[in-house]
Image 1 (cartoon, rainbow, N blue to C red):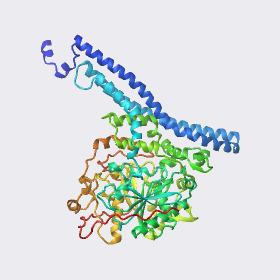
Image 2: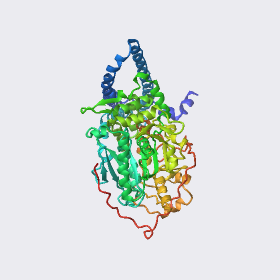
Image 3: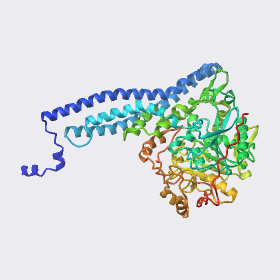
Length: 634
């Protein structure tokens, strides 16, 4: 009977028997163990070096903020009694301890989850080694882990620096034309990146206002890869302009800039644009740039120069951004003061510490932006194929190197909008030219307004961005992912929610602009041009575009050969983009839209634009790119 049981033993059990301990096998096993031990010693050293570096990088803004804190408190501390000072500093200590506890708890959990996964892989590797099974053995496992840590700790920082020539604006490369400038700004025309596209000189122009805090480069993220907000417009032949702030350290006029000067400079640029193209422009602002654009229009200075508005993830009523407001409410009242973020330049002008402003947003989201979580996130990002992709490098370049100090008076406008709510009649808490600013002016003037929000945005929450809809019948477009996804992921033409198409029940900002242009001319909307990376996404178009759209796709010639999307790269980058707070982005991957119901529906269903066939050369000949108006310095 016992022999019968042994003879019928399952194959899985026989496969688990240890390998035969011959001298040759013993030597092979010893070699693998020694190799694994050497790699383990190497990876432990790199591991602790990486943790230390991430912690120091996270705390760097705190060191620069200490000088401002001491300077302000040297004056304040004399204004309070000893008991008040003790109570205030005790409250500040309690606040810091709560932050540290929150960050440490989530950081240790992230480490524990990652290590649990690694232990499971380690167990399999030992099993494969001892039982001579196919698959990764202990030597290969340890070598892979050592390579992963070297990639994250040593090579990744170098790759981030190396992405600079491909990231953002490079105005000297011939893809931009300087049109005008003032003491504070420079106006550039953005030329199509796709050289087969010509600018429609008589087309409707657009002026894009970048944010001060996030910087302009995020709007030209990776133009060579097809990921660029501004080039999404330019590649459709739209006369596209962007307002760029000058270097704050080299230009005192930028350091002392007021909201009124910002508005007058914008007015001058819009006058130049209207003179060049013979028609009003669409004014488009991203994040803080959206708020700036709207208050400039509400001042009345831009009447006749603007006939449509686009705001993307713009905080119109900061008090409705619950996450940030709740965080600021935890700060002891004495220390909730913008003066702690101010630093004095050698010429005596005071500006706001840009790195500290960004750090505040990280502190707000300590559960996902602390150094432990960031370290684990990067390890997971490259664990699959040990390859650094350009999107990940560019996101981190933006986070690490694309921050600058900010004009004090401009930041005061934003600060007031986050601390004082919009009045019940629609009046904003800020003024320009000593005039009240009210959202109802947009409705009175009959302007079309597209408000773009991000479904997973925890920086500018939907309630904040949609605040004007209580007084204005604005069209709403809800994009999946987070705060900068509109400028990065969805600026890629072949994604389902790309800016130049209709998706679900919404229109992207490029499509909106083209439709407004067509409506003003009482002509069919200009066809959507397929640029280098534009391959139709049938799944989404079947939901969003009218039934006539497929016919249009057949008739519409492509301007260039479509390039496939690197889905592996997109999937690897998704976790990184989703985790950022100032920035942030994707959980849903490019090419894989979130089909769940949007968190916010527009007050009125957004019209779905019918994209007509491309006009024939006889009826709509291509217009040559004429030179822009000469630049003028004020």
